[in-house]
Each structure stands twice: as C-alpha cells, then as structure tokens.
Length: 481
Ligand code: SF4
Ligand code: SF4
Image 1 (cartoon, rainbow, N blue to C red):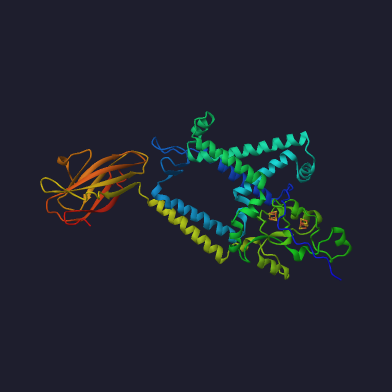
Image 2: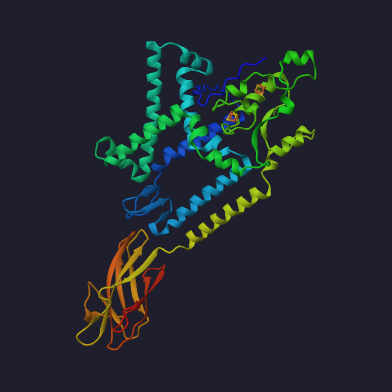
C-alpha cells in the first residue's frame, strides 16, 4: 500500500523569539566581567585625558580626521605611518586566529560587540519584563494598555542605549567635552547628528531585535572560524556517551545503568542566548558562551552527579573519554603546535611594532624637484634648479631645523624668504609643532656644472639632533630626461 509522502521541509522558518533564562555560574560571572570591562572601555575611553603639551590635543585616544592624526596615549600616528595601524589590524586578525584555534568561538561568546550589546539588551528585557516565563507569557498576551506601556518603556531604554552607543562613537573623532557641549547646543557638525542617528538605529535593530540572527545568518566570521578549527580546538560539547539515553532521576533509580546522566530538564536550552540545543551536536548557532555549562553543572550538582556533562572539550578528548579514559583538563588543549605558532607570529609582530615605535623619528623630509622648467640659466651663466621640500615636525613643540645641501660642490641655495645674495650651503627654518612646513629651495650651481645626484639633509637644532636625508637630482642643460 502506498504511504502518503512526507511533507518537504519548509525553506523558510519564521524566527522564534529567544527568551533565555537567567543563570548564575562561573562562566556567567566571567561574561559579566568581560561585559563590564568592554563597555567601560568603549564608553569611557574618550573621556581619558593625556597631556601632550600646549600644541596637541589632550584626549588620550583621538582620531583627528581634520588634521589626519591618530592619537593613542603617548603615540601619535601620522598618515605616512599608517603601517602601525595596519600592524595593529594584522595583530587583531592573528589574535582572532589564535583564540579560535585554542578556544573555538570564545570571541563570539564573550567579547564580540554583537554579543556584548545583545547581552545588555537581554538584561533590559529581564529588568522590565521579568525572566523567561514572564516574557513568554507577555509575548503571547493580547495587546493591552499595560503591555503597550511596558513595551514603550523597554524600547525607550533600547533607544537610550543606542543613543549612548552612537554618542560615544563620535567622541573618538573630536574632543569629547567640547563635542558634547556643541552637540546639545546644536552647534556640532551635521555629520555628528547623522552618525549618532544611524548608530542608534543600527544598535537598537541589531542588538535589540535581530540578536542571534546576526550571528547565525549575517556574520561571516562563524563560517571562517569553522575553517580554522580542528579536532583539537576546544568547543562547548555535550557528552552524549555519558548523557544518553536521557531519563529522569526516578527512571535511573528504577533501572540503574539503563539511562544516562541527562535528565532532559532542558535547562541548557532555556539559558542559551541563541536558543539552540547543544545536545544536537556542534552547530553554527553556538557562540560558545558556556552558559549551558553553568546550567547543566547546577542541575548535576542538584541531583548529585559529577559536573561536566556539557563542557569545554576537544573532539579528540571526547573520543578518548568515550573510550573510557579519564577527562583531560581543558587547559592542556591550549598548548599545541598550531596555537604556539600563532602566538609566536602574533608576538613577533607586536615586538617588531614596539621596536619600530621606539626607533621612529619625529621628523620627516621629502623633496620634489620642479619639472617645468627643470632648470633655469641665470644671466651670469649659472644654473638654477628649484625644489619643494616638505619638513615634518612630529614633536609637540616648535623646532628649529637646518636643511643642508649634500653633494654638488660649489652649489648654494636660498629660499622664498631669503635672497640669492644670502645663498649658502644650508638654511635654518623654524617648524611649528605637529605640522609640516613647505619650503621652496632654489639651488644654484656655477656655469658648466653637469647634471648630478644631490641630497638634502635635515637636522633638528635641539638636543635630540634627529636627522633625515632625501635624495634627488640636479638637472643641467643637455640632461633633461
Ligand atoms: S541541562 Fe544537562 S541535564 Fe538538563 S537537559 Fe541539558 S544536558 Fe540534560
Ligand atoms: S549552546 Fe551553550 S555555549 Fe552554545 S550558545 Fe548556547 S548556551 Fe552558549
């Protein structure tokens, strides 16, 4: 007899709102700590001050787009030093590889902004609407004035959080106290208002409403991470050989040995912020926040069974443990060739950057010869070349600098502010703090001088005696290539 065909699985499934339950335990407390530290860093950093003297801003971390500077405590990065920022980004990338290969998606579970803000919004839900069951009940209840007011109150807290998040962001780009004053008096640049509005909207949408959907459907990182993990990466794992078949405590008492340790209480599912059941195996929705470990450990403690039915474990350790070997401490999975290699690369880049920062000069010199005309013949037969020199003073105080000619014997130079009569082998220039001075230099050589290599040297006239050298050419008649 023909059986009725099974209905095909739906291609689209409507989202079921996740109302995760409150839980306490070591991982939850660690999450609290990470959340407090990361939010304090994000909201508080623009308010930190750092004295750089009278000629530079005193905000500890500042991205000064108008003047093209990036300040980070004692470090000031100029546009041509962007390689330091690139180095930091490379370190962040390799740091993520290191963390992923060692402890799986710990970044996702604890420190990713989407996780931190979602966690914050979930606490707001709990504060306003109560824990899981009250929230489920309220969701299913018809719209009454009470529900409308409650929702309005909760969503206004969302908007306040979103607004502070956007507000904190723009403070990284201008002096925070000044910007706050200008913002509230309506004098800030329009882009500040637009940025805050956009970030308020995205924060509320992504953290307040979309939540786990961002991790499961939008973020590419989980897909990349799976390529970086192997059988020795730590993952939050349900030990099915120990938990299955599931059965109640009574069933275990009646038939000792017939059921596993999982009593099917679903506490691990109820506390999960992405709403998944870890007992179905590793899945892309698991951000390895370990709240299910806290929940299950509590249950195990209550029924008098050993903790760790759900635990951080590697696939290899699971195989060994299922075969009867004693569990291996999770930290042992951290030390292996791959994590050590990532750490060495990460550390080497960090050391190289520290070394480069320690040796970096606070001056700069670049030279561009005039191309049209490349030279001028003077009335006395001498030959003149003109150059545009850019002198950088990256220090926070004004500095006198000497620019000298190196090579081309018999040549002398003068600038826009001096005359040919005062031509000499060197010029002294005062350069304002934290700025670039453009200098027009006219180099004159005796009649008959052939084209030759020429260099300008720059030396600061202070105790640091920093120096720079820029090479160029002197063009003469018959050599205008
Ligand atoms: S919390 Fe532990 S005992 Fe309860 S269902 Fe989850 S795995 Fe089973
Ligand atoms: S399954 Fe466990 S570790 Fe994974 S997201 Fe849910 S609570 Fe966190």
